[in-house]
Image (cartoon, rainbow, N blue to C red; front, side, top):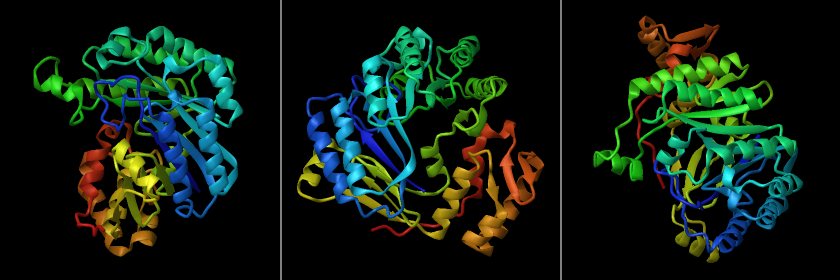
Length: 380
């Protein structure tokens, strides 16, 4: 299986917590779309197998016009083999959504929406500097459901200073109310070079409370479980049959192509990422050149990535797969680490498969890093 990710680097305004690459200067969006279509042609040989998932992320892809989205999808269809059954996701902000736009999205092949709700609390949206209102969030969800978008996901952020336990539970109750099939819940993180980071450093707002975030994570997991959503990845929950197929490609170590400035690509032996600058990206493509950096992955790199993604997933890691894919050194190392961590009682075991117990999931990334084998990778 293979997927294509398209990074649409435009937003109406900057959210205080966001460190993704974007611009609020939207005047040259058509120039960008024309450039993206050129890049699609330039990258047509990157993926040999059929494309099963397409994901418009950003930024704010819902800022694009129907004609622009249609042009992009037509270019992908012209240069890649497309599978018979495909998941095509568009990230959308509530303030961009309208019944006519949703109908247009469906008409051109968008069959999954990921709506950036973040919170149903007005105070939290103001704190994040989001462009939409609580009323627009409710309207957007209802519009999508009325349009027959059954494969609907919403994003929520927990652990913000202004979000109480009660407010978080109220947010989660709306998931049950609307019968949402997929939810991505993220702990607020303080990223470098963001407005949030600067505000905290200046003492203008309080810093993140790690104990509160851990408590919020437990609330999220427990409450969504009662709603019948499977906790299939640390930050993702889904009703049966509604997992994100595109993101599952990432977590399963399958090939994907990233298009647009700052987008990452992976072909199992190397990882590459486009330049994170709109003007330079457009200039390079206009000259027929791809502007990216590339990292060739060593065996240790690939093992470390496998452990990182596996420990975030409900399936966990498989010792037999490690032996077959990476060899005896990594198999023995994994067993040694399991034995070392045994007193912490953090693993569920099913034969040679190990996954994290619920109480250890909030620490997944740290536990994975304990398994890492440190070894520098060659670059070119």
